[in-house]
Image (cartoon, rainbow, N blue to C red; front, side, top):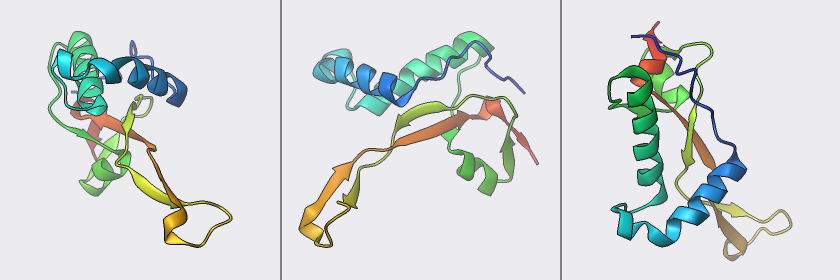
Length: 116
């Protein structure tokens, strides 16, 4: 099934930060353990509304490629937070001067890929 999900508007990193800050205080009350669980629930709902089917597999562009699939041209990624990463400050070479950062990760569901 090839669906571009053209009604989906990808969110920017700034929008992702805003959503995360709004949802974080109430995560437990709305039944989620973390921000990404909440985001994936929202994304799954959007895909289900667009396709009539619920996505079950979400992977990065690289993961789909390694599996022998390609993301359909024009498909829009769904943005979530990556696992935390320790990054050294520019002017420091000491391990204790590392800060933890969350980068974004772009995911595609099975309806956005095709076999190569």
